[in-house]
Length: 266
Image (cartoon, rainbow, N blue to C red; front, side, top):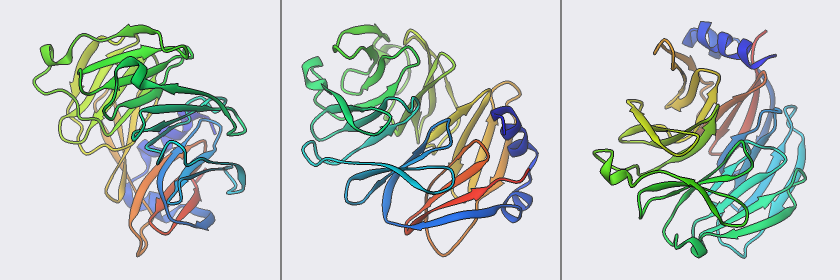
């Protein structure tokens, strides 16, 4: 299924229709705290023991990584499945993994005088975006820790600087989610564009013109062009939902006691 067809499916599904028409592919018992997906249909979870596991769209484990030397994993960016980005907030370290989740490089953000918790995301040009909350700047760096682009001091541009919950780049724009203030958007050079009045977003997917995110027991699709919002009801159980995402024709839902894969209707 193409991504375009997937948004159309999401847009046309009513809340009740979506939940009733899903077919469970697999349920994997686990206790995990982070989940993200890539565009190949893979899902990545960080379990409570700090191990990172990748599963295919059929629910089969395809790669594993675990390290304790930098503390707990705080973020995972699998935008580029050939270079998975891990961020360790306790040590201000970024680790880059290859397609088999083997370590290939490690970056120490303290060398950029970033000592407080930052937020990190892959850039389509092979660089990395880092939001430095202490200095209120969005910067782009390469793997040699050289700054190749950066925003102005956001304290001079916005009423309240972001306190991020998530950051991602898609289609030459960077989105910084702040659960209380909305979604701050920047261009490919790090220049501030505007702030979208979309709140409570802790994980964001940008698919074409659609912003897809979870709000409670619903997956929301917000169209940047029409500003129309549509909702899809997520399958509910007695367990608490931690995160939900879509990739290809699979809906991934991470509950507090397991990961469940659902086939979206054709």
